[in-house]
Length: 238
Length: 371
View 1 (cartoon, helix red, strand yellow):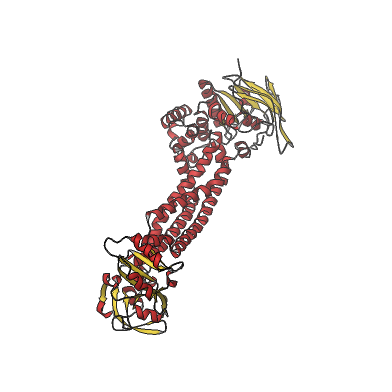
View 2: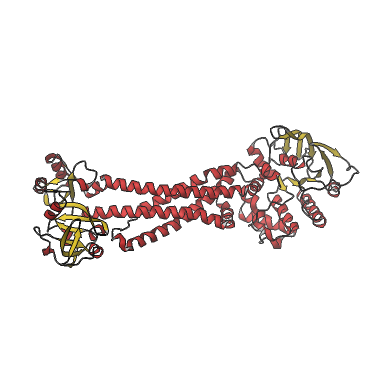
């Protein structure tokens, strides 16, 4: 089967080549799979997700998401509009807007009708259990509720792939587990493939596939090394 | 773009104070420009009305930039009056003099039969008191007020004192705040022996304006005849005044535009991550730029509307101020308001150009890298 997400020999440096973040990373994710990108802070997880999602461009290498290579700006825009949804550790909801307005943002960007946007938003909110909060300003919501709203926003344009960067990293263990289970269920029901970055062992082990990222290099592993949980950190520079 | 409007409005609402400051800059610029334009155009209109009163053609010295320096000799006045097709030729001498506590008082030297005196309402004295050989003057109603003079009393103008023979209520602010001299007295007082500033010509029924203009051209090398409308468009002083008003107003708008640019730049700089999130959500660069541009246009539009109201109120207040001696009679044609609106629009576009460009170039990955 053709992979929904593929990266081949992807290299990325910052500071005019002085800081190498990704060193020839290759991976594939099949349709419907949930894959974990496991590694410590600074290993390059976030950078890889950003490249795969068209938020940045690689120095070299090939990336293909559902048949689209995000080489040019307009392809990267198309990727974000049609192929991928993003979920961040710090939800990145816009304050001053209600939950519904936040969820509707991708609909505004792609010119979805108000009716269709509302229909999709309500369906997603129902599934994530935030339907009663749609009219609330997001600053009044709890951390778990905000992340659920962010999940709705990442799926409203019906992407093929969900890229999640430490989606439970800012939540306590219980809320994190609930959100993780929720976004796994929703993605499966909708046939969305997931690639998520995490340093939490239990989340990685609950995935279909595990990619271990270390110092900008990636390797697929059957199981995680026995040293246990990687030290969590809010420093998300990778 | 219409679909993005709620987002634009929400953002303006989220930063109320900043939005208010931006709109206030435009409002002040619009109010200032409308006030200056209203005053200048009002003054020009008043002066034009003086000239156009019962007038088909204005004859004055060719090539003078200011009517106060125009000299039409007595023989030329008689010559114009004798031209075929001319029903009457009324000479007028303009002068400016100072009075105690009033540095500028406009004066008009007229013949007793001048139409301006006929159409005014006499509040004291009578037309018959305005005699060619007399040494009395008549005052406009406002002039009588600020010079504190009444019929039968005296008024000090320059280094002389004149008896007040009458007080007229004129339709025109300049005239209402002016002093009317019998022409010979004005010529003596202003040291303009046997000359006038211009001749107001009334044509006989059926006479051709072009024909009379050509006759003036042919017979008087020094003179030129114009219809009031032509005069308004060509008179250098009017053009200078109008240009000055627009230039001063535009200067105010440059400041207003800088205020808008500053407001929007602050808005963009403080929302870098938000803009990055919008890009992640699928907003294109033009859409991001359009959001900033739309914010600017709304600020400018609301500023322009508020400024227009403020400008009209300011003009009304200025018209009522006693120390302005009734000289202020604002004239704000729709064209001028429309022009100020266009300037506000241009200000919005120019003020938002760099912030919009900057916002559209924000790299989502770089902006979100540092959480």
